[in-house]
Length: 259
Ligand SMILES: Nc1ncnc2c1ncn2[C@@H]1O[C@H](COP(=O)(O)OP(=O)(O)OP(=O)(O)O)[C@@H](O)[C@H]1O
Ligand SMILES: [Mg+2]
Image 1 (cartoon, helix red, strand yellow):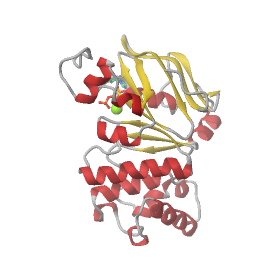
Image 2 (tube, protein in one colour):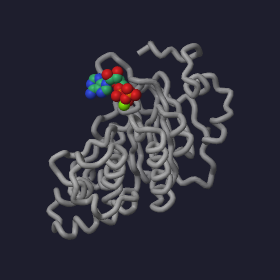
Image 3 (cartoon, helix red, strand yellow):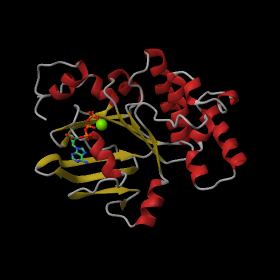
């Protein structure tokens, strides 16, 4: 699918290939991600979703192809440029991944504290970000162990947006949450997009969540994006690969054991 003309492309994967030894993971991965929209990348376990994200962050180098952010290649950047690129990104890790030994506000402002920001200032920003995800001031001084799993996810989300990133990567944002908490997180992701014009790239196996947060849905299969369309079209698609994935069926064109 070509993106509608009114979309401005924020991130573009161009024919990216990546293999480890003789195992080809990404073969010809191309995807355009529009600014201020959320794209969900679907794909079976081990198909290379995380590898593609790592290539975008410069943690892995593609063997072939290019990745552009704001029209500029981000492949093989020198250290200083890599650092500037990282400032554009926020990351919501699977399972939250908060530091247990830090308070919630220290977790949220971690990047600032690392760079030596004054603690009072860093705390003030953290409290503002916590408010954005619906958490009150009292949560700031608590430890992650003292709050629920859903609240931890919110703290993680506050951390992901703390530095005002332009692009946020969500890795399994709702995995392991009960449906109500998952719905709250989904709504927050949509709200962040709308309030802060965040470009989102999300990986999820949770189709309900995908339909709620996505503007566009892409399916990665055998190293390529074989499907890309709006969420509305995806709900009624005839594409057998997508249908199999959405319905979680064992029988269909996707061979889940080919990896
Ligand atoms: N640094 C690496 N060295 C060697 N192989 C790797 C490396 N990183 C990933 N792989 C392999 O690449 C394949 C794709 O991994 P990746 O983590 O991208 O899968 P995924 O699509 O994110 O799966 P999941 O949904 O389970 O998270 C896997 O087979 C994995 O073993
Ligand atoms: Mg992964």
